[in-house]
Structure formats: C-alpha cells, structure tokens
Amino acid sequence: MVKLNKIYTRTGDDGTTGLVAGPRRKKHDLRVESYGEVDEANSCIGLARQQLAGHPSLDKTLMRIQNDLFDLGADLATPDTGKKPEYEPLRIAQSQVDRLEKEIDALNADLEPLRSFVLPGGTPAAAALHLARTVARRAERRIVALQDCEGEAVSAAAVAYINRLSDFLFVAARWVNEKGRTDILWVPGQNR
Image 1 (cartoon, rainbow, N blue to C red):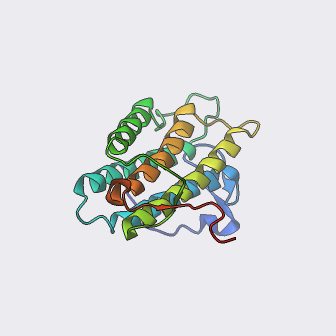
Image 2: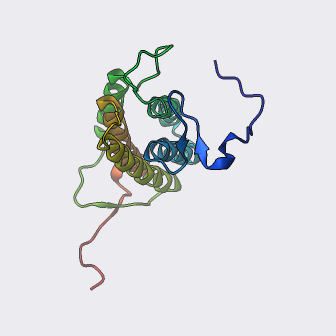
C-alpha cells in the first residue's frame, strides 16, 4: 500500500528522480519521459470523464483504464535490471491488453462504418477523448523509443497496452459522437 505523508522531499532538486528500482535518473531521461507521458494521458482521460454525463458504462471503463495506466507507469518506473528483485514488480499483464481489445470490439460494433478520416471534435466528450488519444500516441512513441535503447527493457504487453489504448480512445470518441453519426469527417482538398 502506498502511503504519502510528505509531498516534497527535495531529492529532485538536483534534476534527478528515483525509479521504483535502480539508480536515480535525470528527469529528462527517456524512461522518466515515458511514464510522464503515460501520466499526461491519464490526466487527459480524467478530463474527458468530466464530459461523459449520460455515458456511465464508458465512464466506468475509463476509470478502470486510469487505474491500468498507474500500473503501466509502475511497470515503466521499475526497469528490469537483470537482478532478482526484492519483490515482484508490477507489470502490465496480457489480460489487460485482451480486455481493452474486447472493449474496443464492443464499442466498434455500434458504430457507423468510416467513410473518411475523422477530424478530432464533435461533442465536448469526443474532443476530450481525441485529445487523450493523441497524448496516448505520444506516450507510445516515447515507450517504443525507450524499448529501442540499448540496455533498456520494456515488456511487449506494456507496448501493446498503450497501442490498444489509443485505439480504444478513438473508438470511444466516435461512440460518444452518437455512435459515429455526428463525427466530423475530413474532406480532402476541401479548402484549396
């Protein structure tokens, strides 16, 4: 159980932060940026949830996803050092990825087929979900860059989860736009 009595510690005043396990890292380190981007995506989802009056089932799903994103942050903040850890680190599980896929399929089954790319917008809820989607995609790019760094390990389930999350947020944005009927579609070359 996490217990925080004091919010500031002054240990980061030198521009470093402590990971769950391993040495301190600079605050601009790619691992720190990765879980920072996940935190930003989580905050955007929290903002989107404030727009979801009338969609309690989606709100409940997004609340669960926010919890999953803390799991993902803990996963990223606990690098695999190759040494036996004192405790079992929290990792994203394949079951979390599978659940997201099922939720994508369930929402997508209700949607009008796409006839063009969708412009971010429509209802305030959809616009907020699209913003969360783009932040999740940025987090994914950071996580994949971290995965590609020599000496850094990121689990396949963590990468898959953040990839599915942006897909889920896209489908959820369409779903709150009256199941795709009020999506704003891109019209190529419209303003030439």
